[in-house]
Length: 237
Ligand SMILES: [Zn+2]
Image 1 (cartoon, rainbow, N blue to C red):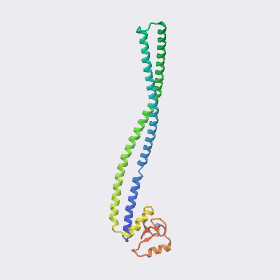
Image 2 (cartoon, protein in one colour):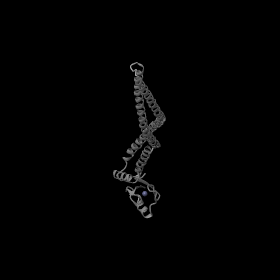
Image 3 (cartoon, rainbow, N blue to C red):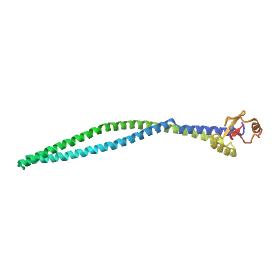
């Protein structure tokens, strides 16, 4: 085992921790949860729109019903005067009868209009109920996804912690200056800071090192840190 082999052990743990983090951040359930959340938001927007429309219809209906009640009370007053004997003049009685007919006709009109509005509201209410049902289905699915995500994250976090503590144990055998180079290369080069030299090929960039440079790499003292002339990673010989 060369002096830098331990660095490859560190690299292995770092790579595995990176893969686990990537897995945790790209769980398919996260995307599904985003889809469900968007569906719920769309349904909520539609519910709000329908709710406003329905409220408008219902308050118009209440106004008509209130007016119909008022007219009905007026008609009842006229009817009392017609039959309580307080009015005896023929002309006045005829006028009261005409008023009474006018008021009961008006009352019937108002009631018909209120019924019309009630009928308009019905399909909207059915639609709103349907939206509530669909929302509940999406919410249940979202709750299920959150439970799956939580469990998967806990599992992956535990596995990441295992990799990181193994890394901590491996890192004590690596020269601090080499480790600094490695960490900065790893940051710059997509998570891989050290790679094995496999024959003529660097396992970091998978390119063959030209013969002249390969010769220099091979001739370097065993404890010297050498870098891949192609990608710049630390080469473990
Ligand atoms: Zn390379």
